[in-house]
Amino acid sequence: MPEDNQVETILLIDDEESARKLAKLLLEREGFRVLTAPNGEEGLILAKVEQPGVILLDIIMPRMNGYEAIQRLKDDPDTSHIPVIMVTAKGAERDIVTSFHLGAVCHMEKPYETRDLVQKIKMALVLSAQEGSPPPADEAGI
Image (cartoon, rainbow, N blue to C red; front, side, top):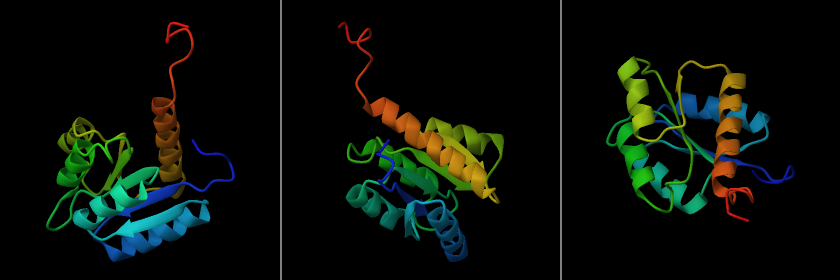
């Protein structure tokens, strides 16, 4: 996780303009830098270029749905390490299982409470930082 004075970047990929604007406003109030993309194609490009700390991804989108987008993110070595939180209206058990199967760290249903989303983002950032750090000395054979 970055130093306290460094702002984490969140990428929100959602085709609903009102959902993007509201989430951007709420997350910026929480101290995050928020980038948005209206579809999976633009989101993939932004993710590769910007390397956000976390990606918030809707499932139901035209042209490229969230499942295809997360599959492409996880297949690309440049973006495979970025934690993805699925934020969607799809909450059936099969949707949740599919999200985790494709590599999401969390699946949240819309509408959501801002504090819950922020908590999940912070959890994803901590887990990501732990995965990127070297193993403890005893595990490294030192």
